[in-house]
Picture 1 (spheres, rainbow, N blue to C red):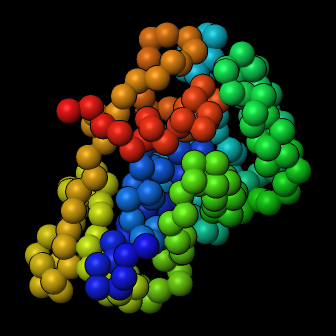
Picture 2 (cartoon, rainbow, N blue to C red):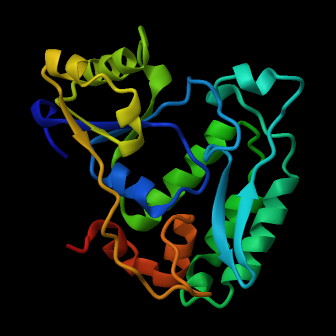
Length: 238
């Protein structure tokens, strides 16, 4: 872990069983902040992700409460699932799709318990539990915190800069999609280095059901590569 003078952080909304790039980002920083006291967005990665099946790609979506238009004005950390019936459905799809994967049996009981022995209904906490568990499998020890742990003021960039200052960070690592709204000058004014994540160059691995697809849940990588999974997250081509 770096000292405070060289502390690097990332700030990102929690996602459901995210792709490998999400964990690459977590692994590259000293503190990863779940940006969960911001507005929940429909049809996004907050409550869904993709796995590979014998019949092609399959979306796994956690149903959340959508009474009227309440979801459109609710923060991620206040978004609640409709019920827990999705757990059995998702686990059945995962088990059916990956039972023939090389390392599925090594992690079967672990994930089955995570899916079926939990009753949490808050989406942010569900995502946290999956991400924390997957970090453990991958050997990622980055500190995890929440944006609600900090005081947020101003517009989007001002909030990010504020979290960086309060956490003692000297560098902020951002996903490339944020280029459309981040004001780089605000980081420069506070002498905080702004770096951009590069998600290109990941090597392919032995994946079920060709052709190879990169942007699917990290569960695909874990079930196919086991303890070697981090090699396909950290090592880049070119």
